[in-house]
Structure formats: structure tokens, C-alpha cells
Image 1 (cartoon, rainbow, N blue to C red):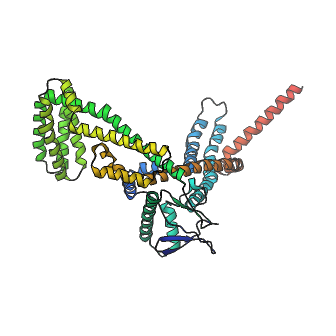
Image 2 (image 1 turned 180 degrees about the vertical axis):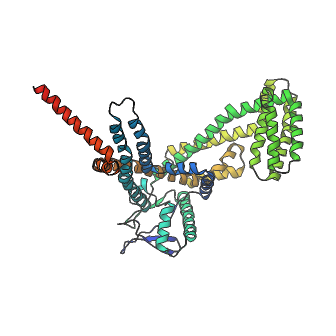
Image 3 (image 1 turned 60 degrees about the vertical axis):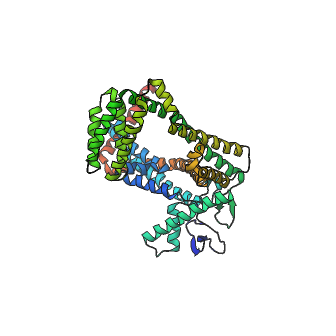
Length: 482
């Protein structure tokens, strides 16, 4: 069966592909990437220069990319070392003749291996999107954009490009919502299978592993953040607070004067110019390192909003430093007092408690799952939301994980994508390897004919040299026999 030949009807549930001749396959589109992630990716790609876009595109080419890169090296680099090899004892014509073999070989490699790899890759893509493989390589819960577009075209040949794109986006949203809903409410994922109406659901043990993997990712992120907080953020805060203790008056004067200058700037370029000048003036002054850091932080804030927003953000930041932070540390007796004040600061205490609380709660969920307790994705999500709603400082950081089922869906998709990528790489390499004998045989047949047609003089010299070699060997053998 050709997996592309699928017709569609529309019902209240969206698209449903129909198998030919009574063999109906019910297919609900599920599980696209969150729109926010897709939007960010699109924006980043749009901002890339053409050179980076080309590299990015080549980087997603899989086995074909490897073939092309190797062929480019064969075609352009190898001939240079063959032609101008100072260690070679052969004559120049022989080296030139041999050098031309490399670009011919590169063209044939792309023609034979590449032209097989491309359709093979497409076949694999269609198969994983239609449910031909096992559950670990099944994308029917979050089909690819191109595959969805192909199915929409089959059902609506009258659609324009914009209409197809709108329909694809609509189906992607349905996929995402359905996948997340299924994980949250049923703690499973339903998969379709090619050539049959049969569906399967991911088992409890497999879903447990996805939940554990998701929680371990969260735990790793929070643990790294806590380490950074203890080993980087707090020492930085202590260093800056010690600077305020020793140089509070100078810092206050510098920042106040800079604030007044910035207030007169009409646009963000004007603010940027002032900050650049201040940064240049502070450069090389070790005692003003913290002031330099503050100026650099303010420059970073220019990315937010327009000039009005920039003025507001910068003013708020400077006011907080001049009116709160500097007076807090300026009158302290020594550095030890600074350290104690920093560590007992309400914001510091609250943030550390939040990190510790998040880590403790995530470890609690992990422990329950590893004991094989029946804790669903929906239950974990509800517990996190309840904690966040309660405003508990120790779990305030859990707010960004309140859509836990969505995170599990993303982990599920990334795992399946990784499985498919690995399969495509291995199978593509196998196909390319099987094509090597064909490529070599074709090269041995094409190359001498190519040289005879394009470089007959060089080709004739090569044949003449080979004939002389045979004659010389024959004479040497004759002398030995005498």
C-alpha cells in the first residue's frame, strides 16, 4: 500500500483518513508542538543570516547531508593533494589523471547514494506518520506538518497555499490539545496503525517512565539553578554589597548623575549612547568593577519595550539601588556583617526556600513513581496547581511546571523523535553502504570514458604510460630468464 494515497472526510472530530475499499482507519490528529515553541523557533530562524540558515538546513539533512559534505571534500580537496603531492614519484600527467577521478567519484556518489537516500528517507517519514512501525517509532499522535499538508491537499485539492497552511495549523492545534488531554485525563496516548482500524494505547509502565523522565528533567534544572544560586548569585551579591559598603557615596553619585542624563534621552539610541559612554569611562578601573556590571545590566534592559519602557525600567532599577541597597550596606562595620545581611535578606531567603521546596516536592513525586504508586500525570498536575494557588513560598518555583501534562507530552514527542532519528540514521547508513558496490562499479566504467571524451590528450598519455610500463616489465622479465 502506498501510504500517500489516503482520502479524507470531515466530521465533527476533524479529519479522518479512510483506507481504500472498506478498510477504514480512524485517525485523529494529535500532539503538535506548543505554538509558543514553534513561534520562537520561527522567529529565531527568520533572524538568522543566510549563511547560518544554509548550515542549519544542511544540519537537518541526515544521511544525505553527510553524503554531500563527503562528496564536496572528495571533489575539491582530494584532487589538490593528489595533483600537487610532493611525495609522489609519478609524473604530472598521471597525477592529473588520477586527480580528476575524485570529482567524478563525488558526482556519482551523490547520484547513486543520494538519489536512493532521499526517497528512502521520505518513505520512512511517511511510514512513521501513518503508523507502520512499532509504538516507539509511531508519530500518529503528532504528525509532521508536511505529512498533514499532503493529506489536506488530497482531501481539498481546491485549497490555496494559505488555506492549506491555516488548515495544517488548525489540525496541529487539535493534535496538541488532544495529546495533552489524553495524558492528563487518561494517563496514556492512543496510537493509530496503518492498514487497520486497530488502535493501541501506551501502557501504564511506559507512561510511568515518561513521567519519571519529565520529573528528572525538572529536578536537574532546579538542582542546577540552586547550585548556581549558591555558588554564583550569592557570591556576586556579597561582592556588590561589599562595594556598596566601601564606595556607597561614589556609587550613589555616579548612578544619580547617570539617571539624570538618561532622563533627557529621547529614544533608546540616546540611552544606549549614554550607557556606552559610562561603560567606556569605567573601563580599566578595578575598583569600579561593580559599577561597570550595573551599567552592563542596564544596557541589557534596553531590549524590553520602547523608549518609555526603557526609561521606566532603568529608573526603577537605579532608584532601588540608590534608595534601598546602598543605604542597607553602607553603614555596616565589616564584610562579615555584609555576608550575614545578604544571606538573611528576605528576597534571598525566599528564593532559596523556593528552590529547596521545589526540589523536595519533585523528589517526592519521583519517589512515589519509582515505588510504582499509581500517580497519574493529572494527579501530579493538580497537586502542583494546588500548591501554587496556596501561595506557599517553598513551592513558588513550581508555577512554571503547573502544566505538567504538557511537559510529559513534550517528553513523549522528543523521545519518539529521537527513536526515529536514530532509526533513520542507521537504516540510511545501511542503504548507503549497500550502494557502494554499485557506485564503485559505475565509477570504473564511467571514469575512463569520461576522460577519453573530455581530456583525450591526457587520457592518451595515461594509456601510453601504462603501455610503456607493461613493456618495461616484460623486458625485465626477459632479462631475468636469460
